[in-house]
Amino acid sequence: MFVNLLTNPIMADKAYFTYKVEPQSLDFTSRLKSPALIMSALNAAGADAHNKGFDYVDMEQDDNTWVLSRMAIEVSYRPRQYSDYEIETWISGYNRLLSTRNFRIYDEEGKQFAKMTSQWAMLNVKTRSAVDLTRTADVHDKYMVQEEPPCAAPCRLRGVAEGEEFRHTVRYSDIDFNRHMNTIRYVEMIFDHLPIDAIAEDRPFRLDLHFLHEAVLGEVLTIATKEEEGKLLFEISTVENPCVRAALCWL
Amino acid sequence: MFVNLLTNPIMADKAYFTYKVEPQSLDFTSRLKSPALIMSALNAAGADAHNKGFDYVDMEQDDNTWVLSRMAIEVSYRPRQYSDYEIETWISGYNRLLSTRNFRIYDEEGKQFAKMTSQWAMLNVKTRSAVDLTRTADVHDKYMVQEEPPCAAPCRLRGVAEGEEFRHTVRYSDIDFNRHMNTIRYVEMIFDHLPIDAIAEDRPFRLDLHFLHEAVLGEVLTIATKEEEGKLLFEISTVENPCVRAALCWL
Image (cartoon, rainbow over all chains, first blue to last red; front, side, top):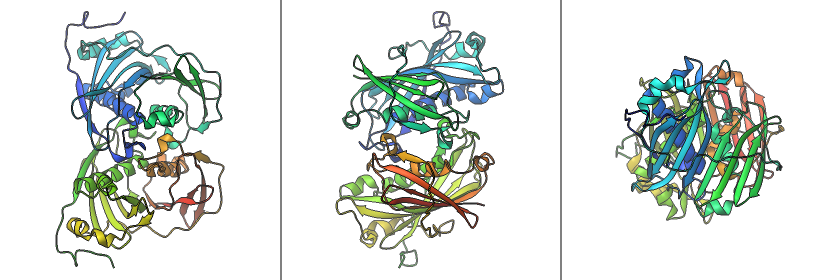
């Protein structure tokens, strides 16, 4: 079902992007915030797709846009202020619904400190339905790299029923060019609900994320949290729909 | 009272930093968000100070840190996705309390679309008192550039009494390495309270900002807004202290 290099003998190159840990992306530990790290990875994904000619901009002409569906990231440690880090990214395969994009992230000594895998759907913004990705084979097949995802695929996540007294109204600075709540804002809401001591210690973690529904300007979000089998579970919802589910475990 | 090039014949160079409008920094107009633009300018300020050896990192050894006191920015238009922009920054003078850092910001055709001036104090984090900047003359004098600020200095701002039903609790993702609410988060709160139509039109504006008091983790902020003489006035406060005052006018 997945197209991979066995069916696709053309070898593509991975893409590399270098970022610097700038003051505005630090948390109180003087290390790069995890949401900022994820933001860099998503920016690298966008830039790679853009450079290869199948990004949002080009898709838009066709009313199609990439939508992040699921991702998992494992972070061993976070780099310090003004150090450089390099993001390596590649597509390893796709099926009718999802394209898999991977990331390895290295510090300035070349040591890997984070790895990530993500699954993207292509959405037609007019019909609001998913595009069959086998129709993108001509572009997709050209850019796949024969290397498996560096960490386990995003795990299954069920709903979290319990609530918490936290409400967030989606505002201008939360929304992206699609007028939806920006991915990173959900990630920040999750990190805002982690034990601050664990962040202070820079504990290694794995975070799984599912993006289910897009909140829009003015909607009120609540976050439910639960601890189960050593995992911290999160669900961010509008009044009507779950938007994001997440599970975080310490490694 | 201000040390300037008349008293300082040594000529320094301006510094230049190039940024790209990445997907995560777009708003719904597919243009660079103004808070993200201000963030880039502050990152450029930090990087320039770092490169010249008088940044936070070095100051910390001495228990001293730079604190942004006031700034004014004028934005003619905002660049679009994936375009590059260049930030030119220089210090034009200082007195006992404040150092003036300026910015001109150019699009990829070299056209200036924003200008900014900012005033910084140096704070001793142990005594919580301002450092006399004439004591930094040896470093400061070396790096001043003989060019006046590109726009009028930050204007006087008085308090805003009226309130609004908006509350924001300072959380992990809001705080910086100093454990204070990040400057950009205040700026975002202000943009979240602007008329969305004006943002949609990409209307030119001038924004003046005063930073009065630093909110910390767990504090609850409220924002008061008022229209007066064609200006939109804002005050963000904790229960006890005004933190930020701002005035925005359309140009």
